[in-house]
Image (cartoon, rainbow, N blue to C red; front, side, top):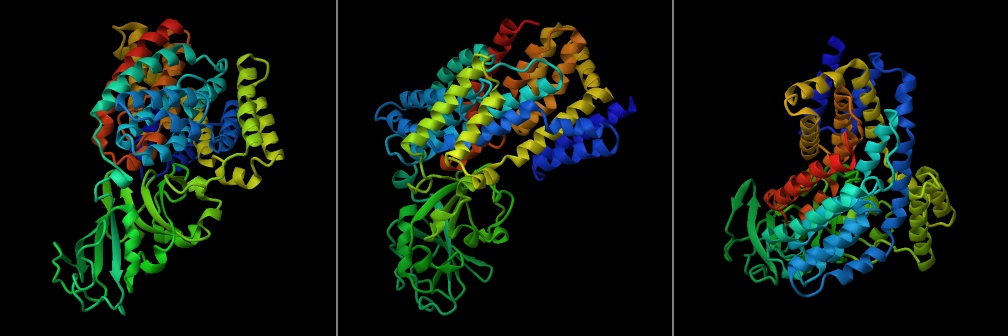
Length: 577
């Protein structure tokens, strides 16, 4: 019994660490699983078996095949047809419907990434009206099939590891499709509450703050703002000057510039090229005349990026990408100060002044979602596109008909993509989901410890005690609400990993078929509609749409309520206790 309580305490510490967010989930899960191994709570053979789980292998191979699917031009071509002049509500419904259909079979981040650049830079409807619905719709599509989201595959890996039957390709569809349809209607209506925050040529003059430095030998030093021509810049405005720790704001036309003055401008992205005319003016450590001589490219830091949690100086950004960071934006907030010392986060929007070799860097797709700059990511050729999309559809169909296991089918397709040159080994190495493997493998080992130590049974007993007056349905609702709370506090995959052993033990404590409890964990772990930081596609649109935290709550709360009601009503009907 003491061991069970110690294991529960360790899981509580893990949850606190995950909520705090300073330690990556991969490290936290791996360390705790390693402690269990050293303490003898799990045998080495069982620990290693967690990382060789067939469902986990299926997830990894599927994600590798998705690298090729991301480069298919189909989604990009479709996105241009969806946004037409007219009602924003209709545009939301069309775009969201397409996202649901695509996300049922293609990785959610690939779907949102394919639509992101087009939605951000089109001029018909404010992107802030469309991007949150796009992200939510990718979740709704993901719950419709086994391969729609990594969360479903993660839950499948836990089910297989627990000795339960593997989940079928369309086992999620009977609940997922009705839930998606109801939530699409709610989403189209609640999207009216989103603000209009324009971007690009229609954005206001405060999209970015740009920091510049007067060099020691600059001819601008000793002259006034007006004499230097900084008074009436096209599309740019000098906000303040930092001089020796003293802030000068507002800046008058008669203010005389001095060497080492730090100038803070705000304005439109396209107008930053006007700063090239000033000699001795440095932007992010380089002369503005050279830094801004090339194209400006706007990117969003991806969830796979190695930049997350690190500063520009730490990674030597200029050498790494042949690009200088002109400005950083986080949501609607513009980050100021010494940009090189700001720890970056997933979802941050960076404005880059790119050098001639920027396009050739192979690490772009791993680190960034590119919002502008056509041609930075090569699309598949016609025959390559047919091979990727046709092969993927064939494997899904054969798996659904039980003619070919999904793992074997995806392995054959991956081999064909490598042999044909559509994918390369270097791409596989760069994009291999090491962190996800560590999280899921370690979580499977932890689930074994929770089960064998009696910790999961303790929690299940507590749930049964709390809901004893409401029977198995009360416990079922309790498991869903617990999973929902976890997915809003931590990541969706981590929520599934923590909730699954508890759900399984609860079902066994009531002596019922565990299928409904397994499925409700999958649906609950995908119910992240309130917080922008718990789901990767929310982070992708957070800065691109100039959103605030309240925007997600305002639109997400009605969707979350409708989603939860539908799931709790439909799952027991489709998967009886």
